Image (cartoon, rainbow, N blue to C red; front, side):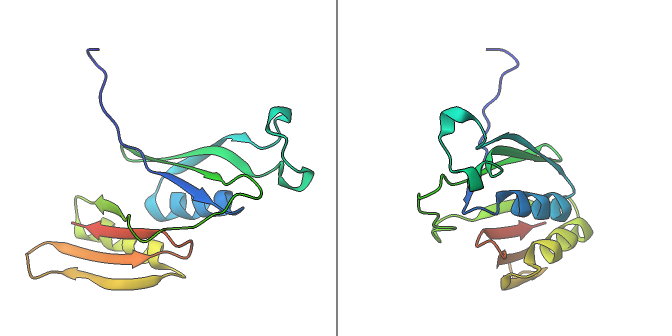
Length: 137
């Protein structure tokens, strides 16, 4: 077990626009994403129009990762249920501000990114895909 570590990786589900969302996050967070598999595998029995959708993808930025996929056709995609936010902490204000501005494009800002009463920089938002984010420094 030496050399192994625990990881907690968010896995996001989308209703057909996973590739668009992951591309948006890669640009906003300065990472790279890769589509590992699509619904074109015959074992998935996906409708023809859905075979190009994402079955599994991964975004890497800094030492972090986010996984994502499109939900199977006919399965409900709830977006964010409201109970979970992705919290990101950055080493400096400029990087955090850049990420906050990029993630909030087309979304809704809850708390603008600013120095807060507790002394840290913080802002929160819901992005255009319905995912809630907390940006901290």
